[in-house]
Image 1 (cartoon, rainbow, N blue to C red):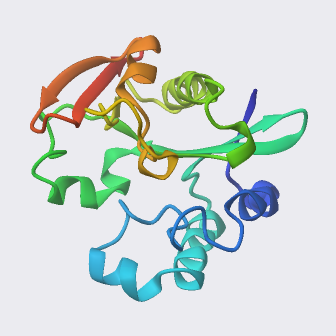
Image 2 (cartoon, one colour):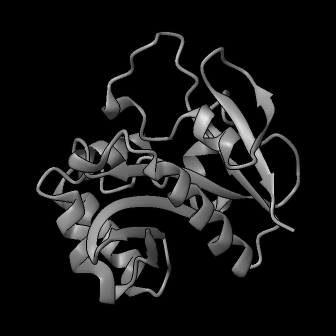
Length: 185
């Protein structure tokens, strides 16, 4: 898988991947970035515009994954302060004062799910974060208690994929939601 940053040059591929629904429920990867009231107010087109504005300002809010030049995956990866809603969660609140980057969200195109692509995305996010000065990358995956989990609920990734990518659990304030980290030395 080839990973490319979301920029104005890759915006059309991002919009294609997210489709009319904005990936899931009009999110456009704004869930962790804005207040719940703003999220609901901007759901759909408004959230798409907000993401486009980030890109137009020159920010790189995440990475797109390509297989055979076809966009199939997305992950939101950036310094944690770009995801202020994480700090509003008692479960995902900061573990300590260390400067971390966050791998906050995934989206894999339906025909490519359940193929282990998230591992490639996680590895690419680690490289990208390290190249941009990160020393720690943090993730907030699910650890399902049932054997089956609907794909739509795995948008923060699965703990098993993070473990395979060398992440370790550093906090758990919920039975199903560990906070995991990987040092990027």
